[in-house]
Length: 488
Image 1 (tube, rainbow, N blue to C red):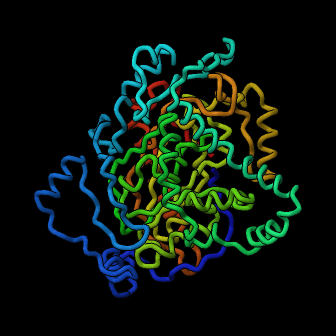
Image 2 (tube, one colour; image 1 turned 180 degrees about the horizontal axis):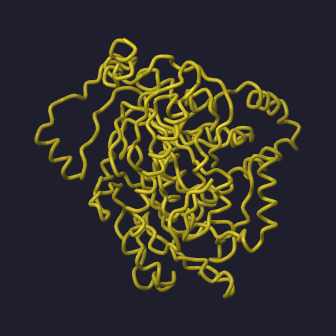
Image 3 (tube, rainbow, N blue to C red; image 1 turned 135 degrees about the horizontal axis):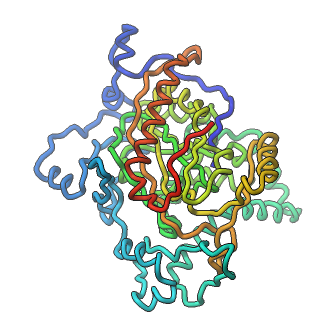
């Protein structure tokens, strides 16, 4: 996943959307609540008195639920099998809310540090329903020991988890291989030629903001629960988000492939719609990914969109509750390819000081900024040290300069071994979503944003990221070898 927005054009609503700003310009009130009441989806019937039953439900689940919103892409019904519960508390007393995992999750996390797969199977036979059971921690003996092969008696559930991760990491080469295979068959040319013309010349589905190809069935498939339980990954909420606003989620760190971002924001495996009902979130990726035949259609069905400026503005300024993006959100992996070169286990180095384009987009569109910190994202792969091999680092930066992306030289585990391969290690990923930062909308007409205000919002964003790190590093980063670093 990348995070660099490219130039594009999008028509913005020239009127400010926040009530205070509209009052300053002598415009009639048009609050977010009014947008729901008078929007194209009809009135909001969710403002009902909270009775004892609702209070009991909130107490049992550990949080009060946001109001129900009518319309497509608004709130989805809470899965009866998923129960919101409060589990993690930091030193300040702040409580993280996440979807309750299956039985055996905590026990598995404790045992995987000290037991081999064979010993774990003998001590406690794995249950098929334990989707969040974790595997052995691998990779520690990369330089000092021989390759450790996986035993033949690995439970089927773990094999299926590995298959799900293998699929996700190889989708682009698989779809490319399929395309070239079809190109070798002349009978398919009458179909391939119009398809290529449509995808490369005509189609604007990745940038027009309509999300017309998004498949909720595919995003909610149980297949992705296998993917998320491989690590395992968890999504944690610090505060509720109003479903009548729009948001830009900034995901940190990039890591090698951003597995945590995909699990949390491109699928429903971690319960995003249950934790943030009424919000339609779109994970953004490089525009070039939508030029890959067949893969583009798969990415569109997963709800992905281009990270270009045009795409972001269209998503946040069209559709939603009132046709102006209310109830919509986008997730940008801010660090991009540059930050992936710094992705090393037990450290967190964020390329953020000079990254202000997403802040400017938030100010122009009136979207709240939501920092997201993924503990464990950098632990999934080992990477060749740029300090020990500076010439490799220079070559990678040269490739990035001319190609727009770069490829880290990484390794982790394989399908049948624990030490060599391109699959990520089985290490826990905890995605913590911070508090929203509200902005004052500017630049809707002339694209000009006050630089001092831009820097002020950027400082608030960085401060919230630091707060997340300080609040939860002792809980989710106990093996860290340093503190959070923010660089250019």
